[in-house]
Image (cartoon, rainbow, N blue to C red; front, side, top):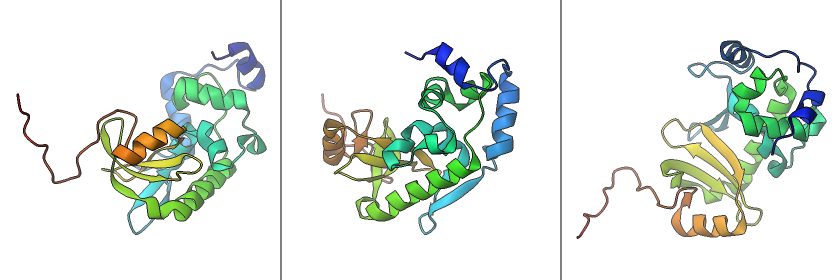
Amino acid sequence: MFDSQEFEKSSPYSSEVLRKENALARITEEYGTLEHPKFDYIDGSLGLTVTHQQLAAKTYHAPSYNLEPELYGISKVQMKAINDYGLVGYVQRGDKLPSSDFIDAYHQHVKTFYARNKSTLNLNGSYRGERAIIVHNEINGEVLIFRADTKQLWTPSHLRTGQMKRYLETGAVGKQEAVLPTGTTPPPKTT
C-alpha cells in the first residue's frame, strides 16, 4: 500500500496539485508529445526506440537494469508513486519529473542490456496478448518489450523464474496465449 504521508514529506511540491491538463503540459514540455516524442534509438537497423516519457514512466524498473535512481534524486517512495499513480497522476500530485541526466543514464543502461542480449531477439513474441518484440536475459530475468507496431519500448521488466520459463516455452509475457506471427492465421476451430 502506498504511504501518502511519506510521499507528502518527500515532495518539495506537495502543496501544489495540478489539473490533468497542466500535468500533461509539464510532461510534454520535458519529454515531448506522443506525436513528436523525445526519443533515442536502441537499435537503429530495426528502428527500435525508447521515448523519454516511457523511461520516466518506468522509473521503478531502473534498479533491475543496475541503475540506482536515488543517485539522480529519485527516492524509492517516488518510484513507487510513479508506479502507483502513473506518470500523469504522479505529476498531478505535485512531484518533480525524473531529470534528463537520469533519463540519459537509463537509456544507456537499457541500450547496453539490448546490445548484450540481442541474440535472444524474438520478433514474434507477445505481451498481454498483443504482438511484441522481446529481448531477454534468462539468467537474471530481465526483458525489454517493444510494441511490434510502433517499435517503441513498451516496458523494461523483470520476470520471475516461472514467468521466464513460460516465456521461453510460449513466447508470451503476461496473458497466457501466444500471438501468431504476422501473416499467419489460426487453425480452424473444431467442435
